Every structure is written in C-alpha cells, then in structure tokens.
Image 1 (cartoon, rainbow, N blue to C red):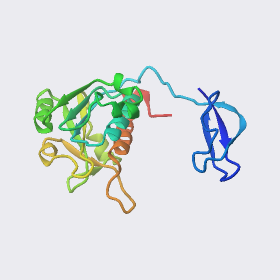
Image 2 (cartoon, rainbow, N blue to C red):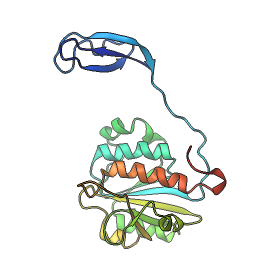
Image 3 (spheres, rainbow, N blue to C red):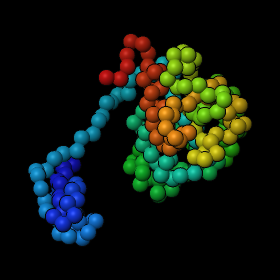
Image 4 (cartoon, rainbow, N blue to C red):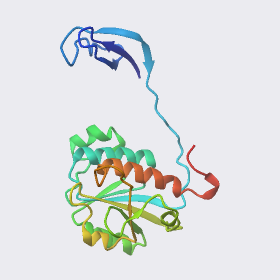
Length: 220
C-alpha cells in the first residue's frame, strides 16, 4: 500500500494518508484545507516464513485480562511470534468480540485459541498434560527474565505456557502456585509494571529466540 503526506498551512500539522483517497483534505486538528506534499511512498511489512524451529513449543494463558484492545494486540503479537495456542480464561474477551478484531487486524484467524471459565482448573489441566507454566508477574518469587539462571531454567522439550493476568490485580495467586517459575521484566521508572499487551510482546519475542535450537542462533 502507498501513502502520501499532507500538511496543514495553518497549524503546520503533517500526517500520512493512503494514496489515491480523499482522506485528509481537511486538517483533523483545525479543519483548514491541507496540501499534498512529497512523493508517494510504500509501507513495508516483514514476512519471515517459515517460522524457525523451536526446541520447545510456546503457548500462553490469559487470566481474566479485561481489555479488548489489549487482547487484540496480544493476538497480533502471538501471530508474529508464532505462538502455538492461546488459552483465554475467565472474562478474557475472545475473537468473537468485534472490537478485538479491530486491534488484531486478522491475526485472530491464524492463532488457535480456546476459552475456559476457570484459569485455575485450566492450569491444572495443562500441567496434567506435562506442560510447564511460567507466569510473567512481579512479586517476591519473581526472577528477571534476562538473567542467565532464568534462561537455563527453560524446559528442554515439550510446551512452555506463559501466563499473563488482569491488568490491575495480576495473575490469580492460585494460578501462580501452579507455575514452575515467575519471571518479571525489569522496570527502571516510577511504574511497577508495563501494559500487559506490551509485556506479552516483549516476553514472547524474547523467548521465541531463546527457545530456538542452538544451531539457529539468535535474531539478526
């Protein structure tokens, strides 16, 4: 798809619109007629198919994540990272919600998912299948995701399921009790956590490459 830049001569706002459309002829800030500037330019997508092999399959469990937009964003990140399955627990919205599809932008069609009413029962069921659960959460049990000791604790085979919880209350303590490890993303500012959708993208992409077989190396 190609885009062009338009500029408002009044408030000097500069912004992109799709080439060949009438969008942006009026400034979205002040309403003044805008001017088309510069030549059209393409947008670029990254498509690295097929997915590099992983030593361990990576899945995720969402424990009562309330925001439709966050979950839609997480579906899009899951598609990009090649996540094998999403377990949607409690009141976590599903792709049946039209607002979710506005954020996932089609990724919901490529990522398998299942809905469950109870995250604790789901965690028990997944563990009974031999899957390993790691929660991405703070607290006294948490270890930094980027330390050598944490990465050497990764399972050698099977399925690793990353658990993410409610935006305010976090992961249910009963689910945490069922997790082999609790890992955190380091925070150096005034806030104690990241947006759950952002944290999901960081953690899954980091582990996507950490779980590759040694002969495939790291991301370039």
